[in-house]
Length: 225
Ligand code: CTP
Image 1 (tube, rainbow, N blue to C red):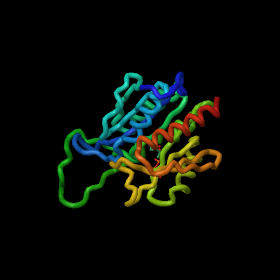
Image 2 (cartoon, rainbow, N blue to C red):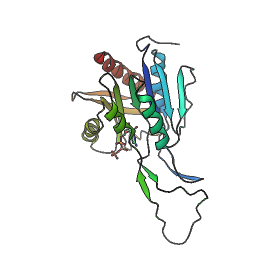
Image 3 (tube, rainbow, N blue to C red):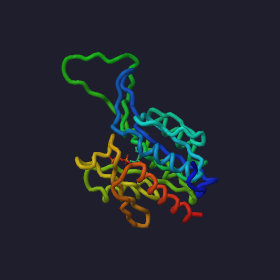
Image 4 (tube, helix red, strand yellow):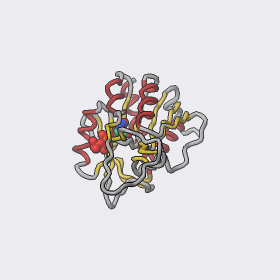
């Protein structure tokens, strides 16, 4: 069921899900992302005619099964980074919906760490920032979209992210008790654009918001052509 042909000939990269940073063979540092938004975006791009790369981490939803969506599993931040950087030169647009862990253990223990008396310290290093790196590599005709999940100062923080990562748009969603953002069907999103324009996409089911986000991204792409 193809909805439209507006993205025929276009290539889109979407990241989804959470990266898990291994501590030992059974433990990891992760987060609560389910991958629902990224999966819905990939499907929506495909249904509008795009060739889609879905670069996914750890997810808790079924992924779209269309053969036109190329799926690449990247469980850690470094693996997701490597694949995204490699593919970015070949795509018209990248939409980074994955919840990438910001830190990863400096050392991976090949055996399960045994508990001992007293406190335990885990030494962490920063993971590579995919959005920032793609922002540095972005060419004039490419569109780059990121996400911001904030518990406070949503617009201010999202605006900072837009500039510091050289993105064309940041989709900001608030995480609060009323709007938990993770493992729920609904979300509330505000789109912030480079020209300081702000658009409320409203509170809705994640797949409806995916349609609205793709509408915005299609308009941005057409502005560049
Ligand atoms: N992102 C990324 N690579 C990372 C971390 C995040 O590409 N190593 C992307 C996410 O996919 C998302 C956006 O960056 O599109 C989120 O921005 P980020 O600055 O990481 O947000 P926070 O983790 O909330 O950071 P901060 O605590 O600095 O607000």
